[in-house]
Amino acid sequence: MLKKILLGMMALIVVLVAVLLVRTFSYGSGSVGDRIELADVPAVSAEEAAAHLSEAIQFRTITVAPGDPRPGQEGPWLEFQDWLQATYPAAHAAMKRELVPGTLTLLYTWEGSDPSLNPLLLMAHQDVVPVNIGTEGDWTGAPFAGEIIDGYVYGRGALDDKGNLIALMEAAEALAKSGFQPERTVHFMFGHDEEVSGSGAQAGIALLKSRGISPEMVLDEGFMVLDPSPLTGKRMGFIGVSEKGYTTLVITAHATGGHSSMPPRNSAAVNLSRAIISLDENQMPADFSKPPISDLLEASSRDMPFMNRMAFANLWLFKGMVDSSFSKIPAGNAMIRTTTAPTMLAGSAKENVLPQRAMATVNFRIHPNDTPESVMQHVKDLTSDIEGIEVSLGEGGISSPASPVSPTDNRAYAVLASVAEKVGDGAPAAPSLVLGATDARYASAISKNVYRFAPALVKEEDTHGFHGTNERLEVANMKRLSEGYAQIILGMDGPNE
Image 1 (cartoon, one colour):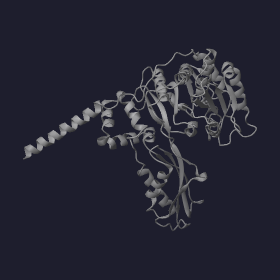
Image 2 (tube, one colour):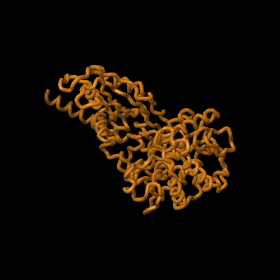
Image 3 (cartoon, helix red, strand yellow):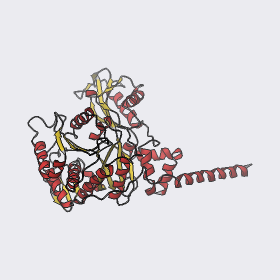
Image 4 (tube, one colour):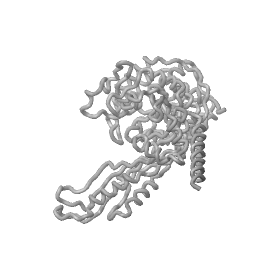
């Protein structure tokens, strides 16, 4: 009997190992979506484009709060827009330029020869975040001087987002000079306040909608080709097909106040702490079975270490292990679930007074698997057995869902993936989820094909400059970006095949 049991167990183990190996070796093709053959484009000088980016950085188009720039402070935007017109004469001769009414957001229209084709919309933004006071001396190049040092353009906006904006204009200028006339109308939209609210882009999208315009593709900032990818340790291109939503909840604990010399066991501060700990220990669930995460894992499979590939191919067995591994890394955790971030606390006004109300502000970045409503219900469920807890929307009631997940089985994604793989010298491209907010979040109102990608090759250490010290962009990337955008324009031109 024992021998039969042992033989049966061995047989089960053999079958299990066989299933694991078959699923592992058959998992993923290393790509998602089709690819196209890219057309030749006019050459762009990296040095000249970098010099133009250097000049653009010197315009201090800084936004700090919604409503910026305030009346009378529009000078840098207006000067920057005049500079664009003077620097790119061929592009401006080919396109119609207008300001979105009531804003400083630029909208360009390059009229196509076939009005039956839905247009292309390429986006970037003019504004930049401020530099933290007292950190100016920590920069290798002064933050608003646009200095070019050791092959890099330094300055606020180099990565976010004047590098992309200037490259788009370089692409338009080169194409216009070459005599290119699009069949498909091309729009460029350069928002003026993306860093604080995106009201300019929101108004611009509303304007296009009022004109009955439904783009074949919308492209904005978001991801690039990273070297190396944190997922595989090798070079990889990421194409944003969705971005996370946003909601802020206020958790209020109500209790009897009084003197701190006679504290109750369940004061407002204690109950609030219990609520926060409950949220931290019971994160919203991850789901690896749906795009974009399922597609991201499949597309990156060819470059994964064998054990990682086995785990992803057999989530039915290893899901807990994979979840735990992702959750240990902030960026990985943010990629797979709605994140929970207590950010502000308030209680008593004096150290010897018990608060009658203790409050925590908790910010959630919403995964496409969830909704603002499901986040609210999650918090209410976790705090329902804690005495005196109330859950409400944060001040202003701002709450927005994740953007729809854009398809990967169309021409738009095929063009972007092809460009990404060219920029990465054959490195795979994968759909992914953008963790922050971009102006593109408004574009789902007029198009189902909204993507977030810039054709640059960025070293991992350079990504730390986003909103930080020593923001910089490699000079060579200005050529990659400019010619990459030109290839995207040409790749999308003409009727869909």
